[in-house]
Image (tube, rainbow, N blue to C red; front, side, top):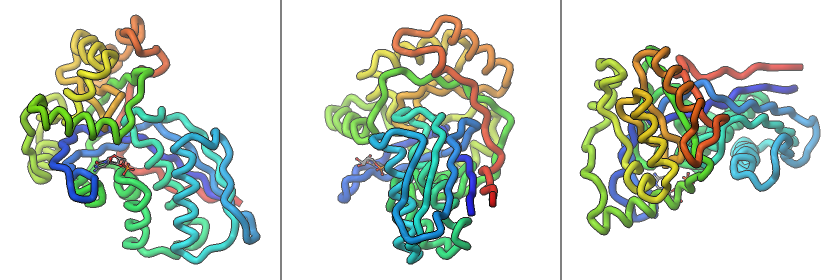
Length: 302
Ligand code: C5P
């Protein structure tokens, strides 16, 4: 038996990092939105006791490892010993703030549930997701949610699709752990901007009620990453020149996104950027993204 499933990227329309916690993580308040940039996964039961194998990308890719970890965790939690062969077609750039590795892991969990007759209940599945990474629980639930805590508290909202996003990913990528460390350093030195103080309820209300080009959203990583990566700073400037009102990072970067209420204006911004990419960004990493109205379903084969 075989299943196929698409794993979408996310953008953070808003991301506020709160204080560091005793466990080394930070609490967040964020608005996550799945978009139409997807990796594709294929999972097959091997029919006999055996290992998890992964094809389609090099062994050293972190996303690849997270898929294997997700399947192993599923097998341990569900008491499954049968082998699983996974293949992935990767399109979401890594280290870019799109949550690609986390989405692949969530898709692997959902795919395994489908392959083995849903042996895990919702709570166990959610705990598996949280153990795999802070962004993984969102990808079980999406396509849009206010996310809190370390990332494990996910409140799903009804999706809006009346906006479009211009996105550009510089060649320099950002490690999530580094970005949190830069933010803490800037805050410690009194260099960080004032907090947004926008609670979960206010985020949800603004998302529901305001026109997308008036969303009062931001990202705590903007200053710390912009100061350290010249490519991000020049991208933000160029995006403004191309008509973007408030370009900002998604996740901890390095992708810069800009929300447009008008899809044609977003497409024009993408074309203009791609015609003369700023230093440190290549044409292939400049794209128009559309919000998803629902998470892709699992397709069965064989
Ligand atoms: O959970 P994940 O493995 O994606 O996190 C990577 C790193 O990012 C963590 O080790 C931690 O340093 C930092 N992090 C954090 N607070 C979060 C999420 C991640 O400090 N909410």
